Amino acid sequence: MENNLKINRIKSKKKRKFVINKLSNYTLLQIKNLSIGMLFTLFTLLADLGGPLIISRILNREIAQGIGAKSIRVFSFLVAFYFLLLIFGGVTKYFSRYFLEKSCK
Image (cartoon, rainbow, N blue to C red; front, side):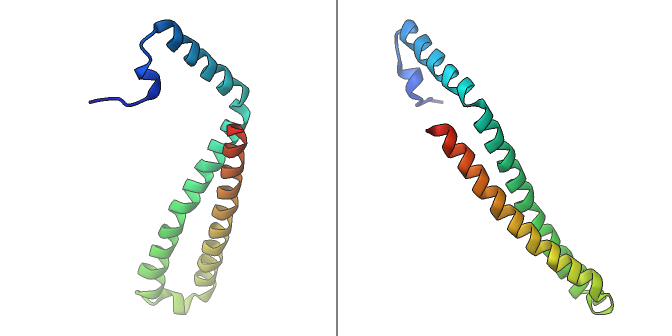
């Protein structure tokens, strides 16, 4: 399997070590922004995975079995929680992109 990274194309060990040290130093300077960005990315991932679970619960249990008609409180809670999860996912996606782009500059 061929690896096409530019750093692997550098033949000189001295130059390769220089490039790796420079990248490591840059990463250490931006570790705070990278960490915050990755944390928001994790929150976005969890919010995006939670949405289909709530929709499947609404469709399979509340609507198909007719429980939602009897217990409108649970049904409305699930719908409201789904919309809050969508908003939370959008906000965390924005902050994830903000901090990861900030670390690139």
